[in-house]
Length: 273
Image 1 (cartoon, helix red, strand yellow):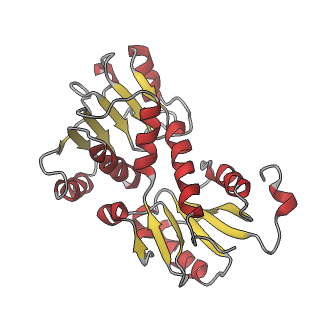
Image 2: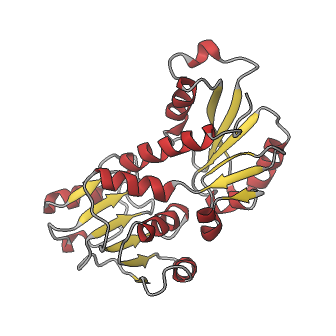
């Protein structure tokens, strides 16, 4: 438990859960807890291992826990968690996914999807220029969907989307084309011709994973970013470094998303006092 939390944890402490399957890899609990405590909130973020088939049962239990103020959703729950929200942000509604929820006044849930905003903040801080860029995004899951929307909102001129699940890829493109007509296209594993290449898949978390794109075709002028936080330097980023590409790690996205999550949870009336 983070330093200082054990001494203050009591029956009055409010609870926020981060749910996922698996869950051991998440890094949010300590940092978000510490940031909320520093803002004067007596709360603790706890990791909870919930399989996809059990999420509905977990949410029914959480709904009746009166000291349960928030929920952070990670893989694979971002789409399923959306169905448990009574209200959501406009971007979460467009994507049909949330990665964070807080209580409304009537104890129902309000959700938002912050992965995309955090990702854009992280790569901009690393020097990536997005206005007018051509980007290749690999992965159309919860994080990938949010990143796709945020990249287009940030001014990317053309976004190519690749996913091994063609149905999921096409569903994301259809959602985006309704708002950004003509600015998306079908991508592939070939990174040639792009200013930005983004891996939003789990490929690279385990030894022996196939690279999400053909890194042998990188050129020095492409910016390469990964959402994976462990290892900090994925095989994809290592290959990009060898070519001389500028890069951003999943840690940069994680830090930016965590800051946005704290802001969301601290919003006026968001948490019981």
